[in-house]
Amino acid sequence: MPRRTYAKAETWSREELEAFQLRKLRRVMARNWEHNPFYRDLWTQARVSPDDIQTLADFRHRVPAIEKRDCLADQSDFPPLGRRLGVPPESVAQIHLTSGTTGVGQEAWGLTQADVELSATLWLYQYHWMGLQRGDVAFYSMPVAFFANGLSADYAAKKMGMVSFNLFGMDKELVFRLMERFQPHYVYGTMAMPSMVGTDDDKPRERFHRLKGLSGALMGVETIKKVTDLWGAPLYEMYGCTQASSVVGATCEHTAVVGDRGGMVHFLESHFIVECLNRETGEPAGPEEDCEIFLTTLDREASPAIRFRMHDKATFLPHTACTCGRPFNGYRVGTIARWDDMMKIKGINIWPSMMDDIVMMHPEVHEYRGYVEVDAARSREVMRIVVDFKPDTASEQRARFLEGLRHEVKATTFVTPTVEEAPEPLPGFAFKPARWTDNRR
Ligand SMILES: [Zn+2]
Image (cartoon, rainbow, N blue to C red; front, side, top):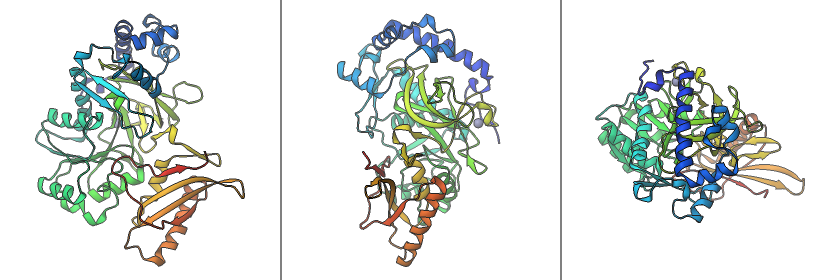
């Protein structure tokens, strides 16, 4: 597999990379101590100053983490961007808002023009790794508006010299007709994009002849295999967030599935410190261990994120886990989930994304919903799955399917669900799916 390098950092040793991170980090700490009252107060309270940070371990042990609720409190005390903005308001060139799917509220993150440039540059790593070039045609399906993801990707396409189409929210038939007419080299779909998953009738493999790659975020391995097969093109995964204003990690030339397993997302560690910590000990996770992700932006001028607790869970992989030789650590594709979404059922950790991967992969399924409940009569926890079939599924087939699904869920999760057919059609999702309800609380 040809290795396509975008930046010099990709050729460094791990030691060189960490020394570089530490130098940048100390500059970030000094600058924000000077100019950012939010961080200065936070660190003063924690009795730590930039001079105390001589190693990355000092940083992990001494500097307090922040999270969403700290940002929301800061914004409400000092609207609209909070004191953590850290630059004069007149140097703000763009504002990103989080999507607010958690229902807590929308964080607002300011960017200077240099931050806007960086947000686009971060995509270019993966675009080069995928072999995209100037003149290629790119189709995007994420909302642009005030979202880090959409804004940064569209600008990245321009920087790359690609032609971009932003088709979020458009009718699937229209999207496919446009793709047939302009023949994309690259298609970005979210995990919920119905046109990417489960539509054998659309025959994308036959209609689009010059695709170099697809990319998506937070998909399960089975979904990825299915999408790859349907489209006849490799799929690459990326991990991004509003706090970073763009991409934080991406799969290299080796794509999102290697052999039969999830591949490796490499963090872009010359721009970020991404701490993957064991949730109990707070120390770095070992290979193949579940971890929680903490993010520090090393290049962002406005609204820097310094030890931002993402509440994301992933299975950690050291840089040596991938054969590409890059010094960047990362996580195994298909293992990312929100710690907050975790449903502990009968003592077993289950994530909605894992259930989506099992249920939605069946061509018979149009949609489904899941419930976690307490069976009061027998005072035990139950998992209930309600399936909405595609109309062409014969009724005698349905009962057999539900029984098969019950066994499949049990074999995968060790929890036996009750499975039933939906009494009426269930609506799909345009963006991030939320199919599970926990009725125990
Ligand atoms: Zn690699």
